[in-house]
View 1 (spheres, helix red, strand yellow):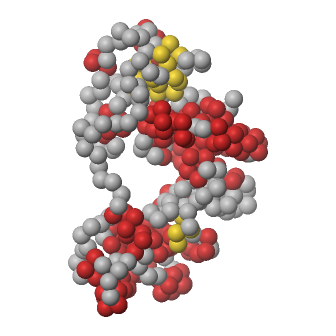
View 2: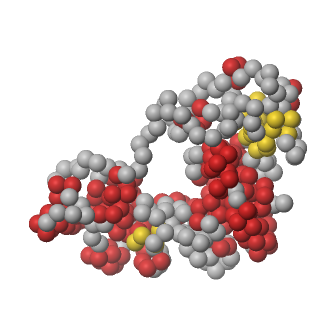
View 3: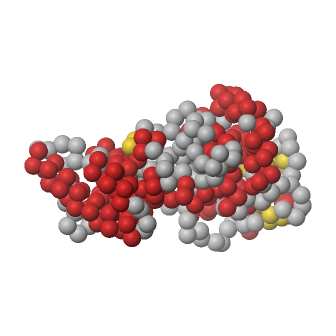
Length: 342
């Protein structure tokens, strides 16, 4: 929460306090925007966009409150809840039903996206469903104001300042300011891309020359496909499969020895990689489906503990984790995709 240099935050009295504190905060904010203007010009943003956007911006105290209320990193010893309740909420009948309707309604374009990027349509639909309930809610925060506020506050300036300048570049490309609504932290559109992700990976899905992820289903789904392809999706390989684990399986020799630099608690729950043939030899059997081919590598995850449904997860599961680094999220995306395709 520490503010850098001469940027003052009015004694941290955002959302309250007297007019003098608010005026002081506004002065500090405007000073900060002047430094951003210089950086943005150097990064190729036009004077036209800067003159249209920067004078309209004020600090949004609500955004700072939301950012500061986010939970910190969990203690390594903190208990992890079971997956089953999360699954019941996120792979429920309503989401499955809407997902199947969305899948059927977009079937031809989903086939084209799979041909183009290699990612199956049900996976694209499942991510869309998890991110915004199939476009039902994409957020209503004014993104230029939110990102400028978060960059000014300074706790994660390197992230949010870059995203703010990326958003200015999007406006430079002709996207209307009023369309740029989203989450308080800057995620936007049907796939909830950050501005920098939009610039790198949003694509035109219907041939009109635009990448409209805010209201165009073809563009949004194609952009999700491009994201997953860019993250390493392997064509023709499943995300994973539910399995039964024999009661006598010795788990200690399977524990991973690799410490992930990103989301370590997520990856620590996975075993070492083994081929499907090796897992089969250890006695694992699929639940109501078939295992991938014997040469596919997979890790084992038991999200509800021993004796409950477990999952063998391929490298494509890791790709879903790249979208959102949460085992519960990635499992739910995979399971919803399976239901959508039935």
